[in-house]
Image (tube, rainbow, N blue to C red):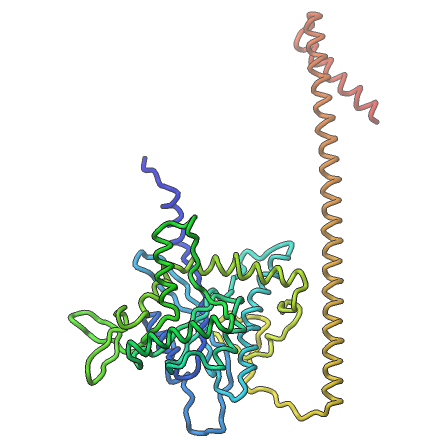
Length: 429
């Protein structure tokens, strides 16, 4: 008989079920987002031309939207990974990009709210899909001057909400010294503005040496510098992704020139589960506690603000609270009185939403209390029945023992027991 260890069983189940991971990539047009996505997946997932704003009409501004791409990957051990990539074409293409910030943060919060609502249901959906974003790669353009005001504003809103991983794109446009200086400036800006990012946490007391060394090394690489390519070349008999220049060739997987292969491996292999666990155990629990304690109004569970944002998905399944709009609605100019009236109406609508939510929770609590009382009564009734059965069995055993001592036959004993039961039933009636 061949024994199978629990670890082998878990691995077998994982191979069969596969892993699900959701990644959001944020960056301005031309920052290399699309090329990175194709390089990460090893296939043409996004058409780069579809994400670049053409300069045919300076007055034409593309509408910012979230777009989902679903890719099925498989690692070297045969583990299937269902990768959902949330791309952000049109990000920061407008003069005022505050709406872009709100669309992204509202989407992230909406995924938390979906989990929160599902957890509060009496009967949960066994096919419910967890669509929380497990990591956000924020692409920083390689200017050599650290973070721009736009980057700081967006990353501040992402801080503490999601596993934020800063990435310097197009690292081949800088020298080694310029890249090192840019990394230093970005880290200083992150620290100065109090921006929380995923720093590969480890515990010196509880984690093993390998985990400590690995996470310490990855922490030293932040922000990661990457090079992407949509072209595949044959080098020494092997097909590799790279970039060809007049002076030579760059393999994007050369870790001496780019952190791309390290970033890919930690996202899809070594730290995939760590990022998911941190999202659920730390970030979501923090959000959940704040939402249930009536914190600063981060929760969108009773607000359909996310429904006004444009969202596209390559899959057939779409979020029911997110609708797609081809063009943003025009808003006519309003006077101060009109604005005041609008704010008042918004406040009243919000108050009505809160009142309805309180009524729903109160009704839910009453229903739960009623169910508990009913279950308690059923248990007490069952306990009484069991006690009666136990007493009857004891009386029957005592009667049998008494008759046996008197020399009665087995038939006489059974007859006496039956008569005793009939007598008890008549007394009960």
